[in-house]
Image 1 (tube, rainbow, N blue to C red):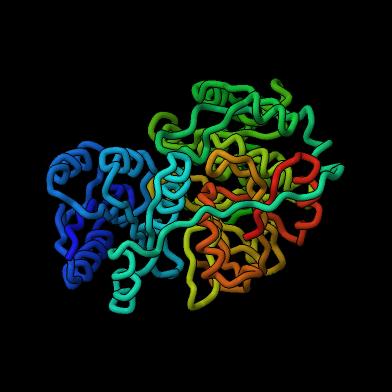
Image 2: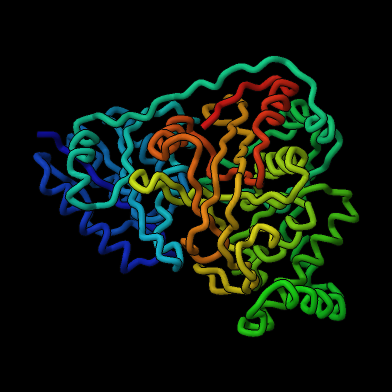
Amino acid sequence: MARIGILPLGRATFDTDYAAQMLDSMIGLLEDSTHDIIGPRNLLFDAEAARGAVRDLHDAGLDRILILQVTFTDAAMTVEIAKAFPDPPLALWAIPEPRDGGRLRLNAFCGLNLASHALGLNGRAFGWLYAAPEPSAREDLADLLAGGRRAGRLQPEPVASDSSPIVEALRGRRVGRIGTHPDGFDTCAYDADALHSLTGVEVESLPLETLFETARSVDADRANTLRVEADRTLTGLGSVDQDELDRSLRLKLALDDIRAEGRYDAFAIRCWPETFTEYGGAVCGPVAMLGEARVPCACEADVYGSVTQMLLQEAADAPVFLVDLVDMDVKDDTGIVWHCGQAPASMAAEQPSATIHTNRKMPLLYEFALKAGRVTLLRLSQAHGQTRMVIGGGEMLDRPHAFTGTSGVVRFDRPARDVLSDVIDSGLEHHMALAYGDHRAALRRAAGAMGVPVLEI
């Protein structure tokens, strides 16, 4: 019997009642095991609470630390926990949620994804499990608690040196980075000089307040004209708060103005929380509009995400969508790609509708299921401190809307079980670019031109 210290992590912006129910089920399965389970039975919503729990566990003589990834969290506390317990083996357990067309109530897989990347960068080994807290998970959970289910470290394959018009097209392109990436989002870190040497792309940083000030000064007639245009694309525009809608639309026009002045080809924007808490409107809908116009925008100031979008946009000659992978179902052999509500409208399976951010409750976001068809996924990755190109392919299925915002159900070219393992084992970043069509051959040539290896998932 091992002494296992548990640390249940959560965020108060998600469905806390449902999260508490899931945590109770997780603890029930843990207490049915043969191990001594030590630690809090309540969700730790902030750093102060988590640090208090870490202090309580520090002298408990633990054989293993188990982080319960009950909802999405950034990776900051996971890394802090790993450093606080350098000797006991570390494991993570994240749980899925029903694909019922409603909000992402937990978004725990994205938290696991961020954690795997951050732990990989820090050289910390860990075991992991993505499974519902149900009796069917007992065997896998027992394996995890016994020290199994260890994350590997996938090695990309070198590709032959080649020339590529995709890479040549990027040289001299400019990314406007607006604000800094949120704490705990190691997936969005970058080095401007290294990126320029690799791709020829220049990055210029602007304060977030520049975006807000520009938006506030937008002429009212321009904002009204954009609202009329948006009304042709979206249903339900009149059902959202109109003052917040006006502020959101002004962000799109502000980005247009900033782009013209700075000659930017793409943006990487700190989209939360300040757009909601300080400015009062979502940038998600404006990002969808810019994406449709082939001006890629990456959330969370993810510069490599914006460059990844530019690469894929050149290969596809079509709009791209920066997605989170938010669920993998090995029984159904599918995954869910999603983001708050910013996919280009041309990717819609049905008439797009206007909606609000599920956590922050402000417009403007797009809502629709992604249309069926062949898709390519791409990430210019820095996982484990090594630059690589990660490429995937699959079929977007004709399925009902899985979650609010913009999302789609993908059947990958490889079994979902294998793709799931590869995502975690590779330490892949949580953002990938998606475009319709099969562009893998062109992207492999681009990797050869850049001199980076390829990992196909």
